[in-house]
Length: 432
Image 1 (cartoon, one colour):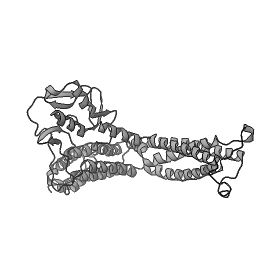
Image 2: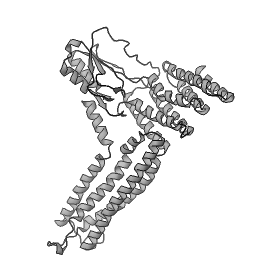
Image 3: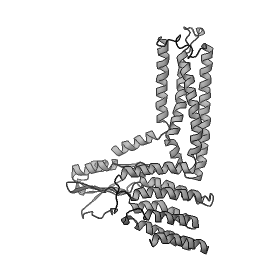
Image 4: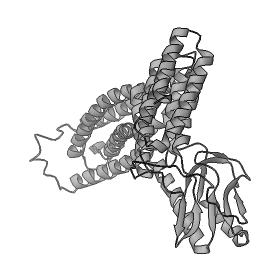
């Protein structure tokens, strides 16, 4: 349940409606508070005369109508143009860059300021009264002045947004955001640094016993797992629960989510409690899934290497960022998949291994880029650089990947001079 709530909260924060909705509510409260305070005589308009709006009813209405009309036009045009630009960027890089747009705090803040100012202006406009309306004339001078101030603030945010949106669709900025987010996940999920490390082997210490399978009742990508909840459940019921699919896996209805032992303790209520600890959704998300960020960067590299784009420079930048993340991951201790209490194992998780991360990062890039000597050499140089800095126990998957790059290059690069340079780069990794 905790994992489900945390994932729901992340979705809310990353949406384009939460922050604008909060600003809209605050703008409405501010408009009501300022106009009511002014109607009640809280502000001494005579003292503030040189600072506040000095026009009459028609002037106030004209000012507020101009502000409201102009803002809603700007909101529509700016964000329509931005969505078109992002669609073009997604077709060139990867569709997953659209997630970066909606979760970008700068974009959320700009939209919030625009919509908040528009809401404030409309609510102040409805309080302007003339004698012809059958009531005492009322011009909220302080509120109108504040509306002008908010417009000036909105203009500043518009200037920021133009620069920010232009930069946000550049490949360096996209890669920087994805890498920073993934590095943050690695540091949160793999908090300990090590000098020497060995990845745990799944099923290495599983005892011989009878198991009951808890199957999924719906299809979806495994987005998160409440590991603490499963451990507490196993501890309280004296069970052993083994997680079956890896994070990010697409689970079919009827496919195993977990194995539970002893099987006699597994009733329908227990199956429901185990299922609720596994959060399934329509797509992979970066919350607990470190591999998602690696896949996103690798996808951009593969797209850059496609015949329709032919952008090896972008692929080289992607390899650099993948190397940065793998270095951070390779120098941190993987969380112990075994959760124990008083020497009894109650939960066994599936954690991302360094070998798995290397495969996710470079397999597709190698497949599509091995025929390009520049990409082949860059891959080998990156693998050699990683092998020189990660613990010795984690160098094997790097050398295996390097051997695969060399093998693909030998079968696909026809120019002898280019192949010789690739083989020279491979020696630093394979013979070092």
